[in-house]
Image (cartoon, rainbow, N blue to C red; front, side, top):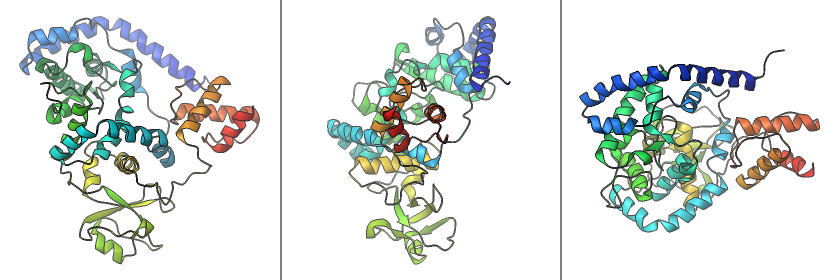
Length: 398
């Protein structure tokens, strides 16, 4: 009998920890050697020594995250359900009301739709909630030094970002104790890597510091700065949901007027505001799912994260925060969907029955789907792993 996947993964983690303990001296030697590179890059010895004070060993959690490879790409419906969901929409509307004066100022300065900024904030850090999670928020200097020292795949990236992080510390925008981020060094409410912070960070609240960690105005303005500098078109949307004809359509970019002549129409009988805009047809879920004509701002969103799914999710969530209705054509799901609050209930019931060990967060990942399959097996139904109305009803009855 072969060892389980979890056993193998635990064995690898323990092995990595063993080598880390043996490599502490090597890591400290690396820190001493990298000091020369930092000083040659304009970082003072005082800043460098202060940054690395108390850092004596690599962060094993960072290496575990770096080495872990997801076993599957999330289905389209799962990706969008985890991001464009009721809780995120309602929270976005609340934050919009709370921050309206700041959002108005940011829009006036950068021309970026406030709903887009709120959607980015939601997707990147759950409106800042993730910054309070000590399990995932790490010391940026230690994380990047760990990757630079022990991860050949990301070493060059990590060294570049580490130098940038040291310069951020030296600038006085943030102190060492608050220079925190993800395992790969993405920082603050809107998750900027250090080099992107250097290029786009903004002191919006006027306190003399570009603080994306504790100042929401600074963080949202920094996101707006990135989009504006990459060509965001003021007053325009990101794309349109459309219907398409049965016949084959061309790839590439055409004007909206040309797409209309091919039979592509905006949903709900609405008209396009500008027929001369150039647009690209996107079918994230194939012909059976929703279709979109994407215009310039969609591609600007991809400068934040170079993913069609990401840019589409930001656009859809922004529209919903702004009061727009949901999609006319939903994602193709082989089950009856539930909302985020019901998904939390499903996770809670799975945990109570001993099938689930993850967080109760209303988001479906490999852990939730695995727990659902284990529960389905225990009750003798087909193992599918879908967060469905049917599974929730079964859990409620048991």
